Length: 330
Image 1 (spheres, rainbow, N blue to C red):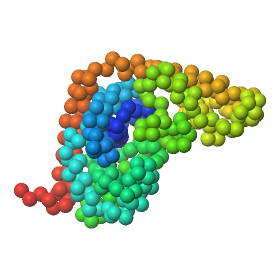
Image 2: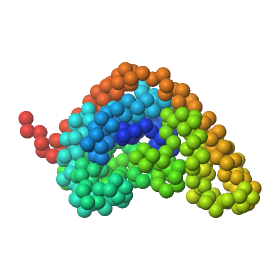
Image 3: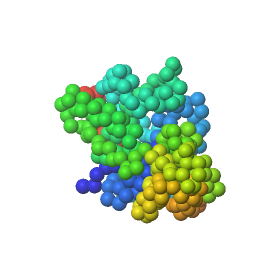
Image 4: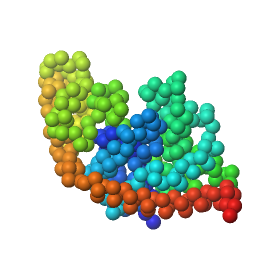
């Protein structure tokens, strides 16, 4: 039997290369012989956009457009909108009883995001508890595999803890643990070299960026601050240009040769940035071309159909959860 795969993205902006290496590339491969569910996570996006819901709403179609542009097939994958599957919300309420405040506060991913967003002194509970919502998303479809970035591994760990506790308390096997699948590159650093590539930090190359924007961002990339002359030996560790070349350049032997040349001196930053520009322009051009003709009406129909399919599956799981919890009164 084909395994069930669940992935999701918050519609707080268009998707970028970090999303591609961390998850999208897996989705494209896994849709060939697995059962993929792809969620547009608007409820989770509202945890830090609740004052501006229009930002979330206007990006739902943009994220869906990116999905199709990279090669996700809506005939093979069920693409749906989180808020339109209310069964997920009910599951979240139940699962809140299976995790403590202290456990949520220890989550390293959440702790990092709290600091990044300046929530230390005023933390919305919706934001703190969104890993519990993710648990509902995962278990609703009896998910086997969750492709994630390396920074999301604590989320899967917490989800599986809730699953085990639920099954133990109610002496059932209704809920299934999921296995994370991390990309080879995992967490793609931002073009500034300081943080992971992120929509909110504006340090990413987006799948829909124009050729001019791509080139401008590449030439602003962090390299080796001590590589002042072409003849100087350079450092490749922490050099963002080489990080992106390793992730996207097809000829790995050429990348190794470029790194060796840079380290011994005689290869300038401009030259390696030009090489990366050629690489990324070649990679992103067909994605941009597939994205352009996609119409809003067609995207809405895909989301509507996928959401109906997702609800049917989630309703079955929710009924099993209610039965295990003795909540079937009528």
